[in-house]
Length: 272
Ligand code: IPD
Ligand code: CA
Ligand code: CA
Ligand code: CA
Image 1 (tube, rainbow, N blue to C red):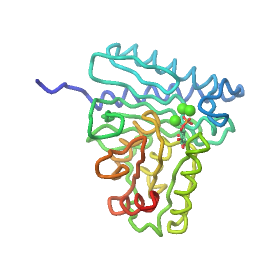
Image 2 (cartoon, rainbow, N blue to C red):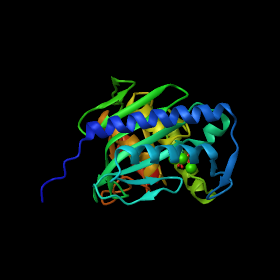
Image 3 (cartoon, rainbow, N blue to C red):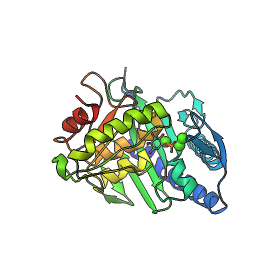
């Protein structure tokens, strides 16, 4: 069969424009105050009306320009498409920061294609955008096109000495998972420069891409948390690995950073 002709650059422009619009909207809604609409997997796992409105806005905007694409969203969107492109969206990544008005939250939008080997969820982003309206930052990447922050090319630090590395991570919402994640941090912290828990996986990956962090690892991420961010990080020079050679990066585990650092950080975090 002939290869499907997708246009990663054009898809990235769509992702960027819609991410900016949704980000502007959630900022506007934030100014009106936030209420927790519901709890999901646990009392700590919250969703606000803004998460839901942002997802609706993004879905409508995508369908307006790309009616044949699939869409997968954290707040319940699951649309099967026919074009071979599935948009994977997180309407607010960092909802707890949003709730507290901590300036580390973002809108994440990625255009993905089926790829059984690349990531644990069987999809690979070919274009993506992450927008943080509180810092006025828009990160964009498309496959083979490099990564940018507000239009300027970005690059990872390349640091491969763990003792000199600022390492970010995140925690899931269940007590069981957090106990495991605390054990991982306990193994990493004595050997790294320091640890950061910024609260938005998508934004963490962009900060890594921009050289503000040296490495990032997390267990338990969902596709919408990482779809755009991993593309932005890898286009900025980062290497990504999963739990082991047979498991691609994804929900089970991922480490992102300089090629010479990720293996050491992986085995340390996993306690191997
Ligand atoms: C969460 C954030 C957080 C990460 C969690 C995610 P949400 O997403 O990305 O940094 O540690 O694993 O669930 O719920 O704020 O969209
Ligand atoms: Ca959530
Ligand atoms: Ca998320
Ligand atoms: Ca979210």
